[in-house]
Image (cartoon, rainbow, N blue to C red):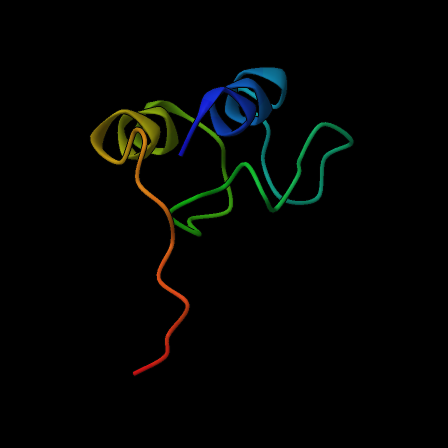
Length: 55
């Protein structure tokens, strides 16, 4: 997670699935809305890189 992820959450803040402002990439916990829970995930995972799912 980095500034790009934080910006994506910020740009789509308070959006819900089905609305013009919603972006699935900003809905980090997949609850169909972009809110403080997504922002918290950015904070908790700051500077971490996603696992490749490999060995």
